Structures are given as structure tokens and as C-alpha cells.
Amino acid sequence: MLTVGIYGFNITKVTHFSFGTMFPTCKSISEIIKKMKSRDELHLTAFLELDINDANECRDILFHLTAILSFIEQRPVSFGYSLRKHESMGNL
View 1 (cartoon, helix red, strand yellow):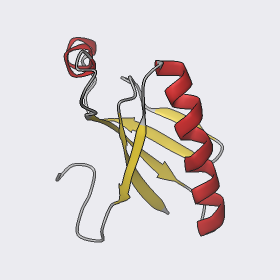
View 2: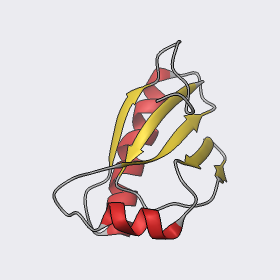
View 3: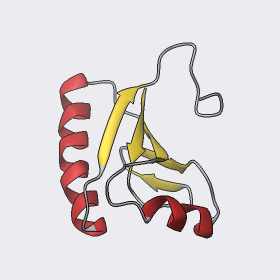
View 4: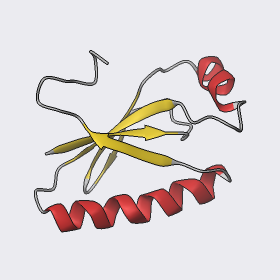
């Protein structure tokens, strides 16, 4: 299982997909809107937990999701590095 940060995507609810789950970093729409106002910075807005073990398939999903989410937001969306063993979504 691979967990990566999502920067710049507006999400406030946990969302499940066939390949994994997106978890928002905050559930307050007003807080997300404040973060999204800056067009020059990308803020950590969610985590994506992939339920796939194949590294090539994970890279492929992240590549396509970057394009899809950027199109939805009409601004850049980026995926960060995967969490290390001592890190979790709650302790960053």
C-alpha cells in the first residue's frame, strides 16, 4: 500500500475508488477555500492511499490522476512523495 500527499485539489470528504481512497486533510470548506485562493502556492489538501502493490501501476495512476485533477481544478494539482514508515496522515 502506498500513501502520497495531494497538493492543490479541493476535497472535503473521504472518497473511495477502485484503486484506493482519498482522505482530506481538513473537512472545513471555508479552510479549503482560504488555502485555494493562492494561485502561486499549492497546499497539502488530501492524501491518496493506493491499494495497489505494483509500482508501475501506481505511477500510471498518479500520472493520469494529476492530469484529471488539474483539469477539474483548472490549476496545477501535484502529488507528493510517499509517506515513510514512521510517518502517518495524522502526524505531519
